[in-house]
Length: 232
Ligand code: OMP
Image (cartoon, rainbow, N blue to C red; front, side, top):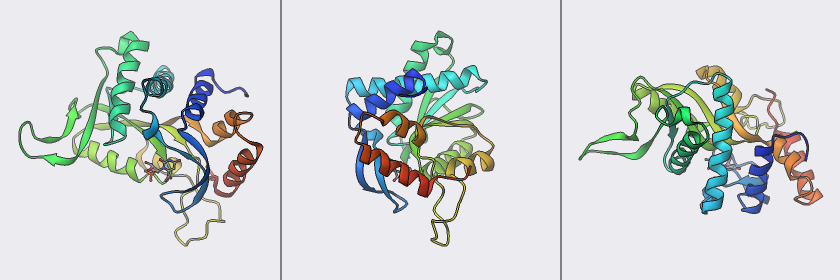
């Protein structure tokens, strides 16, 4: 493997060993046919949940060292919920200064109208700097929804961290995918003025999977990248 950081290499190996990163033929939300798919929902064993929490935590601690400031790790329902919880625990374990400083919270899909009520479980968002955590960004739809929700609750979105940045251009509005175009991540950075981090990108996947998967699968991933890679 190349000069990828060790924790990224470890993460990719866990993804491959655990079958989270699959190679074959997959239809995406965008209807594009992809030669690989990343399913964060499959990180459910103690080993894999630990591996993804650690990789997220190290990515976030890196960003923190470089100036990212936040109070809350927010995991959009449902896939983000276990992620936010596990990652918050890990951030405290790896950096004791975070233990009483960082909280987690997540949203309900349905508003609760009895008991304590409300849409948010965990730390309240009002006036807090919120870091959104999620699995994959393709078009960014789920992330946009989370940003709106957090802002509605009075929170300040500090950034987004995802496991995989697929580096894809947004689908063309006229259906012509052959033209260059910006990525969802690039557009969201501009539109919301927030930083967006990922544990790994498609470049890292291709790099890190050499020798672990067949040459043919690497070639298909490279062809897909050449076809759909965003201009930013
Ligand atoms: P956006 O919120 O539109 O960026 O879509 C991200 C969603 O794409 C994820 O939450 C998944 O439902 C799905 N997805 C993956 O989980 N893994 C992939 O490798 C690719 C996709 C996808 O459909 O693009």
